[in-house]
Length: 245
Image: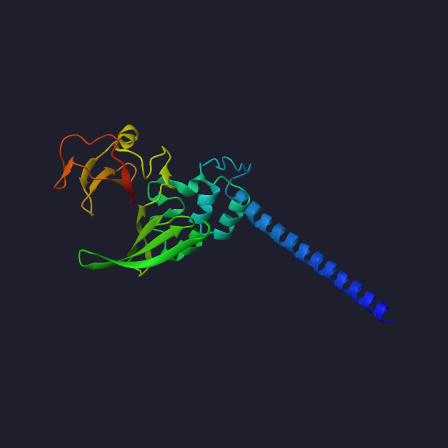
């Protein structure tokens, strides 16, 4: 009798486990169906009739991932990444933007965008500039041993804090021409019109490229004396910081 009750108990547990597993599977499939429906609606609405994950641009040249972030559809952005969309844009430097981070982006969106990059540590720091306290957000991406990006903030007339400048510390981020941390002065010269080499905020040499809306901070050498260029800048002088403004 005990053996019979034991057998019935085992069968009941097994049946319950299968029922729960089936229910979980159904729930997961239902969740995925909802996800797919939301993603398809977004792609259709914005002209991505043929969704090519390798080159996912619509007729206007818009990238769905960047567009989703601009419209604050962060869940759609996550779905696109899960679908295997080309994520090169997440590390591309352009005018006003570093990857998915953009000048004028409200500070409350920073965390949602950071999540798309994986594990990102965000530290708020107050910096003194000319006697004024200026808050910045220091972002350190997973596997980076030091800061990846620094987002400098500004307060608008409506008491809304937003990004006004982005400082690049990591060689993960590059322009479309492949210029980034570790590139040389020659690389900049070969790819962009230089508007001058000036004394940067930190006292180092700052190469300004207005067409990009960027400044490239170079390592100092004997050619940089008292804030001025003396002689020719060695072509192999490396970029150590990039400012997107």
